[in-house]
Length: 218
Length: 257
Ligand SMILES: Nc1ncnc2c1ncn2[C@@H]1O[C@H](COP(=O)(O)OP(=O)(O)O)[C@@H](O)[C@H]1O
Ligand SMILES: [Mg+2]
Image (tube, rainbow over all chains, first blue to last red; front, side, top):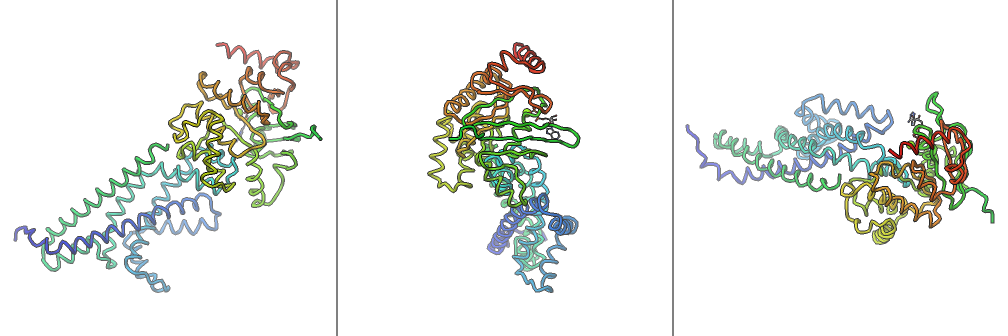
């Protein structure tokens, strides 16, 4: 049985839909991981111990255990305590929080590295600590870590395939469905890989644009 | 009218870092419109004193008053934060290293605080920014980012940023020390202009010529105390204290190199 790509066009719409889901999950989780990362970083650096400790446990859960287990926990586990999330939402939340924890590490380091004179100058004109963080320190910290956060987002795209295990028909699962019908794994995995590659290129282009835009303001 | 009532009143300022006593019972009264220079060797406590005025470095003893308001009064944390943020709007500060916000352009650097704290509209804030930039001769750079400016230009923008809050007093901490020599004059000119407008100013500086030409009074500090103070003509031409004489002699010598 040789390779036969002629079956692919019949399933392109399925694959394409899967790719759209992958993009939706990735964008949703990326946004969540970005703002979640900032939120966790601020808590880790400035919140009282009582708030910080639960976050630590949470961080350990998301850094120290497999993402797959985290997705199962959110999708199947939370139902038992009355939180019944649709698979797509569970996937976005799981991926988003997972990468938020990684982004938080980057952002914390960057916040600490912002010149102390920035906070001082902001306080001197009368801004509160919170206002100074929001308008002066955090924007600079985030700008400094856009490249490594970008790398995390590329990793997030690849890990989005794991969401297939909780039944979201994203790119990988779509390819599998096509394979189930045609028994042509090589062809459809290659096609799926090609789609991942294209999405990847798109993400990199977006990231480069963001980097260029903030370049002047450093 | 009670013209003798001080505008800025520092009473028995004391500051320690652990066992290191940085300010030893310093009192300083500055009248409205008065311009005071603080000179002295590095590490003598000049910055610490200046930064105590807006409570950037809180004192460990003594009081700071601005008009009828005690700057460093004892309040519960939240109330104190509210109080100090309000007080600081009245005290402009200019740093040695400018501390402009690099992620904001010149316009945004100036309008950030007025918009957030005084609720100015975009138009009002822009007008304000243009006025202040015009004053420091930086209007044509309103859309530049700090990284695109020279040191002297940055410092002029930093002055405009402080002025945009309409402060009652301006504090300068070695505003020209980080500048290349050829850029010092443009900043000095701006400060002179403020002096002509009778802005109350406290200026920590190493530039004796500048201090002599614009200041009403000069304080010489050493090791946390005010060793000698008086009009510039006396401090620079006829100092009484040996430490002042030594400092000035060394300083003049090193400046001639
Ligand atoms: N945060 C700090 N912790 C410990 N010592 C400090 C701190 N800030 C300043 N000092 C010390 O206080 C003294 C006065 O410093 P400063 O006010 O900066 O002097 P000046 O501005 O006259 O050069 C110096 O001996 C300095 O080392
Ligand atoms: Mg100093």
